[in-house]
Length: 322
Ligand code: ACO
Image: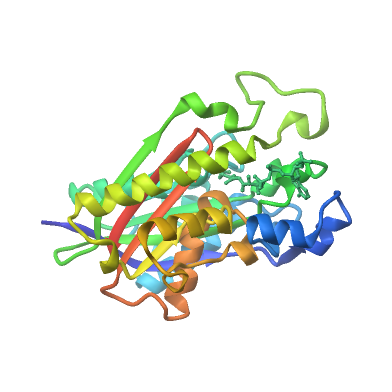
């Protein structure tokens, strides 16, 4: 049996910090409201001209260094993003060229905030089938470029950032299973109303913005994440108490706490970055993973459950032994 194992992790955050106090000056909101309802205190914003590929490249380089691999070793790049630099080529192709990994397969996955889990699941299958021996999986976003900064219901939630992992085959252990889902019937809960085929609008940012029915989405997210967490444990005959860490998508601390409660996990076993990163969409899970690996909380051999939820709607989980 061949598993795909995370050989190294990396992440990158832009330098500029936008605090809740800054947002108080932009829209009618308060630091107290944002912290109580979301758990977010601050988020990072990409500099002018800094793109998703810029963030992805830095995260990828750090993951490759941690894994001890070079561009010549990489034979697959799967990149989750909803905010590509260009409509095409894919951001994965742009990153590939910068890394000097030309020739290998490279593609983007658009599954909104679940993009990294989707990309990880695909790369896992390439490794297990023997088609890839060294896959670079990235989640990278500049989601704040989509934000309507006059809409207090959404502008307080998001941040920019990227995370990456290098996957390699292992005969011992690694990713045990991944579980992906989508329900396009809930499109109206979270979407961007314009695009190439449906057209852009003669309004601010060409009509590009995040439209969200937050309180409805909240309930759907809590239910879906509880189910997909259970699905991963049941598929592997693993009991909740065997889990060492939950590495959740960082959208809202209340959603994260609800999933942890459902699993009977104390918050000490949950990696939380939403307070400092906000919701970085596809970037959030690999960013949280890398932070906890680098600060020594996540150790080799430990059992990790990752999960994510996003527009589409999409959701998924990955259970792995790190
Ligand atoms: N500051 C102050 N008040 C606000 C703000 C704000 N920033 N935003 C909304 N409010 C007000 C609303 O107008 C409403 O006022 P009203 O009662 O007078 O009408 C009140 O606060 C309550 O609004 P709700 O939307 O019911 O508040 P809720 O407790 O649900 O919190 C939130 C809102 C934080 C958005 C929450 O619903 C949430 O996190 N939902 C999930 C969002 C999510 O996960 N999105 C990302 C998915 S990932 C992806 O794919 C990008």
